[in-house]
Structures are given as structure tokens and as C-alpha cells.
Image (tube, rainbow, N blue to C red; front, top):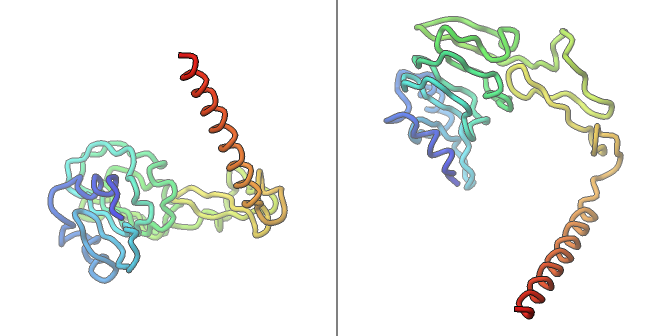
Length: 206
């Protein structure tokens, strides 16, 4: 399944992944190239972006990177980007190598990466660290009955432990999905019936 958003992202630049890009080397063994994207080799119908090469594309502003949160490597170097929000990479928990214009800072700060260096006029952020394993005090802790999970450079999310769910993971037991679906279905039927009855009355009155 190749979505419109993926198509837009992979065609932001002319041509395909450049042979001198680290994305090219990564994709040779991990996937296949389509436009400026590297997709995972799999037998399913779901396309998964694992690499993205948007280097030297004359991009000055980036608001989001669409459906590329599954990427392991992204190259944005050699672009006139003056500012890049950390929130663009929220959810990019698989990202292990990010190349940026040399003047930009790595998202989440240097502490969010194992190695930061400038090479060939590019800032290279390598080896994303796990914020949940760091000794520094986080702004807030996960509530009881939950655990911390990395959610991109400098970000984390709290997930409920097994058998817990709901607000702040306070509810214990399996999530009552059958009951919830039953309520939703019943509500939909009632609302639909009321709307149908109302429309019928209007038709008769006219």
C-alpha cells in the first residue's frame, strides 16, 4: 500500500537516492529504492520506509516527514534549513542515524545521541540513546502500573503494563473491547434510527 503522503515525501526531490548517500549503502542490504525513499523488503502489502534521502534538495523548511517514523536513517544535509523542530522526530524511535546541515543541532540535544560529529559539512547524529535509561531526572515519571518507552530523540511515552488499561493505567483486567463495541454499535443504531425517522417525518410533511 503506497499512500499519497509517501508518494509526496519520496518525490520531494528529483531522481532517486544518491549513490554517495549513506542511505544508499544502508538500502543495498536492507531494502529497495523508490524515489528518494528506501522501503523494507517484505512480502506484505504494507510499505515501510526505513531510509530517506532528502539531501541537496534546496529545502528551506520542514513541518513534518509524513509516514517515515519507521526510518532508521535520514539524510537532510546540504539544505538551506535554518530551523528544525524537535517535534518533527517525535515517534521516530528506530532512527539511528540523522544527517543535518552542519549549523543545526541534533534533535533532543547531544545527550539524546551516542555520537555527534561534523563531517563533510554535515552534522551527523548517530546512535539514538534511550531516554528511559538515562540517570538524569525526567520532567515527569510514568504513573504506577506503566513503563517508560523511548519515543524519538528526547521523547518518551508511558505504556500500561499487561492487564492494566485506562486513564493513568488505573484499571485492571482485560480491556472490555466486546462491551465497548456493543455500546458503540447500539448507539449507532439508535442514532441512525432517530435520524431516519426524523427525515421520514419531514418528507411526509412536505
